[in-house]
Image (spheres, rainbow, N blue to C red):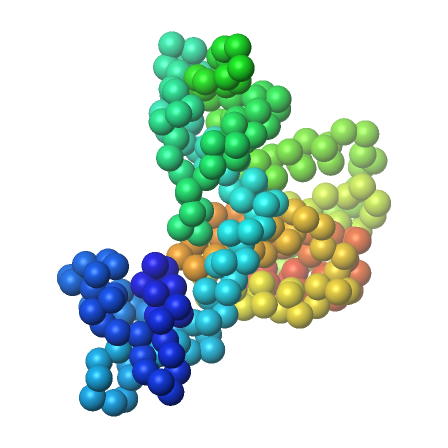
Length: 286
């Protein structure tokens, strides 16, 4: 993405392309050719047709950079990603044994090519500790200086991430028993659990995940967003799916959350249709 941003910043349109030499200076001579080839394959840049070597942005490429930069200033998106990344980092470094704790200062995560700030990491650690997903040691004026994972934190990761984990527990408190209908979709064998009464919960897991189909679903949901009453959780899930170079596991988790929301009773017929079509295309089974 650094290479794409370079072309975005230095493409002068009819006045001239973004130069190859600058790209080499940015990412190295060997990496420059590979990066340019990959960006062309994705349809985000095109080679200049004149004798001068260089690249121009395409409309799709401009959209990717603009979305990337919008996410960098989206505090809700960055908070959510920092919490997830910090939790997974702590899990990889420690066990529920307090003797395996790790210093928070060693966490050097980033998202959208922008490092998390000290304030973002400290807030994420507080969020995780308050919800018993990690345990910590604090000092005067320095909260959560050492962290280690809890069994709840491990369960959270195994169940698909923080938003899914916390929502599942909130929905399980004081909710009436709902009715669940199962639909067998011809030709696929997929089964869908669809909530048909107040308080019912529809859960989805994913098989045969396809990131391209996930992005098509996200685009359709964006177009219908005004009729779906999306919350911040679903909006963040959309942003996750739309993130360039997103890890498939992250996109899969976001699609699972989004599909569960769409197939809930609160989204109406449009949400049901989008949820079922998306599930069918993505190979989701209930």
